[in-house]
Image 1 (cartoon, rainbow, N blue to C red):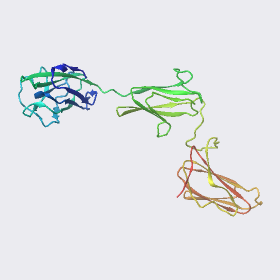
Image 2: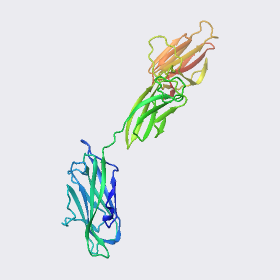
Image 3: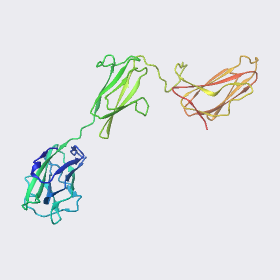
Image 4: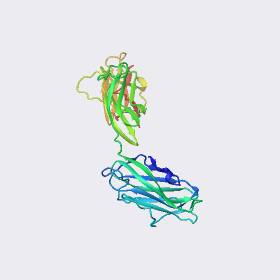
Length: 371
């Protein structure tokens, strides 16, 4: 804001706005703004009136809309809003609304500061509005009052639209060259274009950002080995926009997250989870403890019958959910188990058999203790 004719007034005025800068209104989105005028105390100045004139209308040089009507207040009880008709204090060449404050003490010396607040709805035209400050004042050793004025320019601007685009991947060793399908383990970086002030980068299903800050790039010095989905969040003035970027890797590692078995399947990448016991000798039983599958997986039961006499009956009982499965005379049983299913185990038979229990989860899937 540029102050004009500051020397014309005897009192010192400091003008500010909230918000700063002042944004114009838009269709169905009225924007309120406050003009704050701090008047410094000066006991050497006698002042009868202070007038604040604010241009209203729809033009670029107007500050507020005509409706709703702007309002004005001050925080000093020595000054009151007045409807007095004072020559020169309300005259203007344009469409102004005037707030006239009368100094309501006898000697008129400005011994304490004043804060004047003007509120209104900004119009929808970008531009510069000039408010006028007038005072009817004189110095304490001069009995001649006169009207003095100061002009203050306030700039109104449209709200800047937050954008986030042009996300690209480049190699660290060949900067500036886009990498459409980056090689495994080769250093890369994500870069983007945005007018945001702060950025969060998310990867996969992780709810916590893997990168935060003002930088418009995310560096992966070791590259990637799997296809990865990135989400970039741009933030400016409490507003956010998001962009998703799917980064495919040349010859990526496979990541299994779900399973539909329609024929024989070879699982080469799984998460192995051992039970809290490993081998059960004949005559003993697994701990009476239920388990819950933390995700889809397979329960594998292996009976080591190498020392079992021919014709020995070996019986395995598995309780999966609400169903009980009894399988006699087997050596290995593989049972698919859906996420959230609870189960417990029981084995029995004759001879010197050993029963081994294993859990193979699809993805990073663990067994959970049951209830």
